[in-house]
Amino acid sequence: MAVLKDVEKEKLRQLFQGLMEPVTLLLFTQETECQFCETTRTMLEEVTALSDKLSLTIRDFVADTNEAERYGVDKIPATVILGAKDYGIRFFGIPSGYEFTVLIQDILGISKGVPGLSEETLTMISAIGTPAHLQVFISPACPYCPSAARMVHQFAMASDHVRGDVVESSEYPHLTVKYNVSGVPHTVINEDHSIVGVLPEKDFAREILKVLGVKWEGADVSVK
Amino acid sequence: MDIETFALDASVFEESKELSTGETYDLLIIGGGPAAMSAAVYGARKTLNLGLVTKDFGGQVGETSAIDNWLGFQSVNGRDLVNQFTEHVRAFGIPAKTGGAVTAVSREGELFRVTTVDEGRYVAKTIIAATGKRHRPLNVPGEREFLGRGVAYCATCDAPFFKGKTVVVAGGGNSAFTTAVDLLKVGAAVTLVNAVKGWQADEYLQERVRQSGAVRFLDNHEVSLIEGDRQATAVVVKNRLSGNAKKIDAQGIFIEIGLVPNSEAFRDVADTTATGEINVDCSCRTSTAGFFGAGDVTTVPYKQIIIAAGEGAKAALSAYDYLLSRGFI
Image (cartoon, rainbow over all chains, first blue to last red):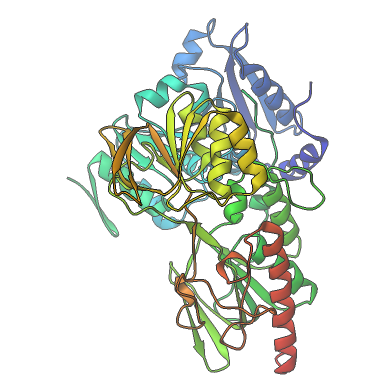
């Protein structure tokens, strides 16, 4: 059964006319699909059918363990968005509700090859020299979450050291317990540092640098 | 578990014209909720040279899961309604400054100067302040410490985290009862705590919550403390008559005790009430000619989406009349 309404498909067709480079969506699911896997797959099939620049590759999380490991996929459904390279952009759980728009923003951003961040933020991100794993926990009905979700993906696109995971909280209750999440958006940086709510992009960059031990003083960056 | 829909907010993809710092606008609308967006549509239809300055679009509407009183829709999701509002506004190609909360508005001769948090400066002949309201905090110990760790203000966002848990809802109005409904849906055990005697929510909502038989009611009690360690574990309430305190074991508290007007930036240019609402007359005029107010940030009675939208329309038409009467257009 189709999950996208015709009116949404028409909007997407128009938006996708602006696609430049090809984008591949890599979905990890399994033979006996999980509760949200089937709907995620159907949605991605419908989205990618709307442009020749888009393609969908489906992998079995159980059978293709090497692929799953290669992309750091440890739970399903997982959607990896690939452009000229793997930027480290992931959705874990179904990108529905407010996050559906983030998925489309990601596709367009990757296709155009631009993260869409300010010059100052990009300069700050360029100071990141060690791995930063950003996991933002969201609820699809939360109006504040897409800003945080989109931001971690923009940061991932801007730095080879950053991986940005958007995690749909209700699908992974064990992770909400592990990271003590009871309000969203909730961003976990490298396992042990949390931000509740949404920060402006420069403040978010500053927070990541602080966690990584990079001292930021305006235009100058130095490692502590 | 229900799956949320796949509705696109197409407005975020449209290249809106940048608001210009070098231009004198006929009208600048400050805000991004239904009052502001309605004002923008009415202003655009009068072909005013107008602009919009807002932190974001949607306001409180985006936080609402189901809206049952917007005419023409028996029930509509807040997100979908906001998407339709923003698409409607964007269709007029109105220059907009988003992400920039307004920090000050000042009067300079016949003009107004607007300053944003990122030091943007804009000039206009008229202003409509439609910045809405934000959640009122309890201002009790533990509230800030446990934010996102048991303390919540958005049931649409956070109710699912309290599945099967014990939760206090502070407040006695429609928002508190709607939050209780959202929490009952996920099987939470709810105690409603109201600082005054009785309950202010619509009878319809009260009836719905009472019929569940799963909610404990505690009026005339105020929350005095939120306790916990890693996560909130208890809420201490005090009986306002006897002064006796009691501890309610709870893993969460949703604070729905009303709203605070976002009027701080306007207090030098327009009279406000003791609670911060901008005083407006029935034509949305304020104490300063050329400065208009609309929606929840003003003294207009009944804070409803449909009323805010109507007020936005009225404010735009008033601004238009003012511009004409002064020979500004």
